Length: 457
Image 1: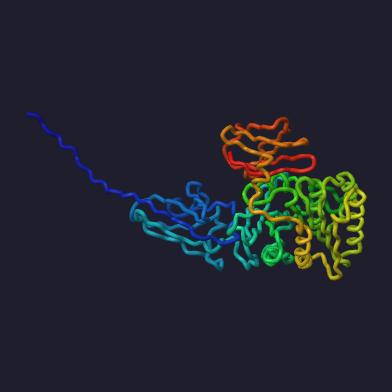
Image 2: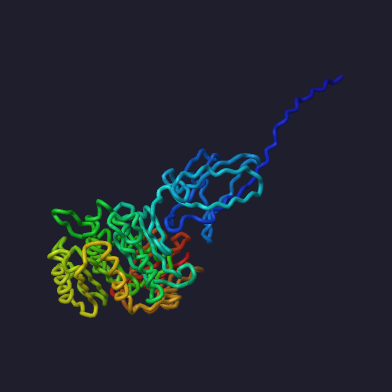
């Protein structure tokens, strides 16, 4: 007779797994950096503030979503961060926000609003469509990072318009008094006020100065007492790293006639030397109380660069800022005249109450902007102008060039501003099949002008 062996029966608890969608409907307007990633941090990942497995997905409408998996009935605690505990979300007044919490049930949708960030707490004075593009935009030419701001015109989000761009130095003093140690220009308020009375409006890009590196970066020449000498590298950053990124991510009119640069004091010096070094990129400069005293090399520099293309220069200063200010500007302008510039290209405005101060430069900004841009025509579509010259055929991954009568170089930049191609144009077609699929900024640089447009590969 056979014996039967009965196996023991074990009972295991049954776990029902669920999915919950967490959505961020709104974030703090201008001081949520555009390029920052928002992370989900909580009891499910040991409160790791930068866990790449829990990045919120940014949707086209500006909201953020993440689908979380867990067991039904689990109690979850969580918060949002921008990568570390110093950037964790807070209440609107900056006080600590208690942990968010919910109990898992399948199909649950949770909607959240972020009121403030721990590193952005303070009394802000910014207005309009001001955005922090990045807190740490990399400058490969100087191996440093910098905060970048962008003021967007009133109708940026309600139209399909393209806009001129002004690149400005000392970004922390332009828009928000919280970040300026000496007051702000109020450029955002000025542009808001100009919107209904002057056309075109423009995108204003502000680049923070480097603090202790400001003097070094804002002059291409060395002053034995104060330093300097990195101005060329800084200018190269503006032209070959920052501008390609701005042109590839915002609706810009990238041609030189629609591109200006402005700055004050040493920022005025580096703005002046930048437009001279890159006359094929910039056509306008607002130079406020410039530090031409820093080096006499500026005069030789003007003569060496010479007059390459018609441009517009707006100089402004107070008559009593220093004994050298007005004479130095006059000497620079006379050197420009002797180097081929005409009186129609230069305007020098002096004010008896002018001081080397943010309130003065901010007051004069509006007049400078209007004089520099009074001949620029705003457009709603620039594609026809560029496509007549450059056509990209995605089916064969080839760029076709037509009607070029001078020597050009083709440069292509990725969305991080890195140059991925640089070659002379020797035929009317260039194959780019070696580049990975992405959005790129294409720039053709000639002896007398440049053509820029975006392509999607």
